[in-house]
Image (cartoon, rainbow, N blue to C red; front, top):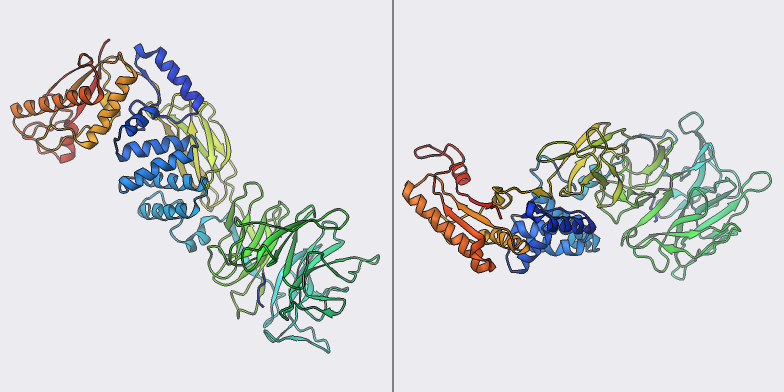
Length: 640
């Protein structure tokens, strides 16, 4: 039937709270004589504000603001990164940019970046956070369990059976089946009998013993989509506009759907039904669903204020039987397409069908989780390339029913039963020091979902600095984020398998505060200071790194540095000595002239190829990468 409705930023970047940053800066100022350096976000800002540009600079600034939840600033720097250095942006930075834009409600731009992210991670062994197509998303992406389905034996071949509803110990459903009465009315649209309500016995574990619903509910016209009140004494259902044997029409001459209500008489039989006060001859109101307490009704309608062909609405059900004012669920739920067949589970999760969102085809079943507000496609095998709708579930037993026309003619719907089996997975997050590999007991760990929403958090406990996430959803993606005073914040993406598993996620944190003794090489914390072959001029990428040195020397006026320049072994020894000296002179001159640093704070010389870091000496066959390790600059902290 028709369904209605670490760069370690030059001296150790970190992303703690603003309060922690201030505390560490104060400590650094007090202990400068010990060469303690802190978060250098402001140093990067100074460098960027001087007009320097690099992928590393923009990316680390974006990361810094992102981890501090300053998404507006983060998106600005990620935007510069993607604009100026698109090929150097990492997949993680592209993803964080998308998340930052989502926080600003720039959903279209965010969606484009997710597509870009997917392209970048196609060959990444860690996999994509989002699947590459919307079909794959519906099939795998957000399934919270595994469903096994079975077509019920109560379906009538050649007729439509759908809209299952819990009815005490029975299953209530709508059907066009011909029950053999003397007068059978046939709907002109599909040449099938009109829908009536039937019940099936569920006491044997399977639906059986079909009977037509007794009482004054069924009429010569369509009835379907019922919801029973918590006490079982009131039923709400959908019917054609047919009240007190009067067939109603809109001004256009069409007969709309309405929601009716019936209560039981003293003998427990359903009385004559009445239409609800927000029904109308001019628009459709259908598919009622009640919350577990019976105080709110969800329904589908195309009444004024709807965003699409059929929207989901809700209305308060007052204790005296009256109703509040219907409220549209808005664009976060409704689309220009059809949203219909709502159902509220015993745990308060809202299920519904829609053809206005990514899916496998036709109507697909979606759910909005009560606790998190997360909306997702329930995936296969509930959804198919055909219409899948009128989904109901008991989330205590994880069993339920839905209807689909997947196996038949589009006008022939069948009811399926299902069992949902969840996984019992455990995720253990270990937090360790990246340098020492020692556990960081006391580190704070947060678990975030794909929408960057914090689900839970707590400390990594002794002895191994572990945090246990013991209720993950099967087949779902998460991020584990770890932070600790004195360390850079870091996070790691992981996906929980669709079957039970024990997953371990290790997060390595880099120190943000380091006691730097005399002789410490600051150059190890920078990106390489590179020169063109046989040249000594400062390249733009080298200028960015030297700008960081300048900012540090400005921040700490007592700091003195010895600049040491080296070459690889290619070329004569004397030539390399002269070349390294020219590069050393250029480096020191740049810092003095560009940064306004006093010459008496800088010393240095060229060492040529006299201090190689590997075996690549004269005559040894080495790769370009091995030679590159010897073409380096060192910035050695000197005694004050």
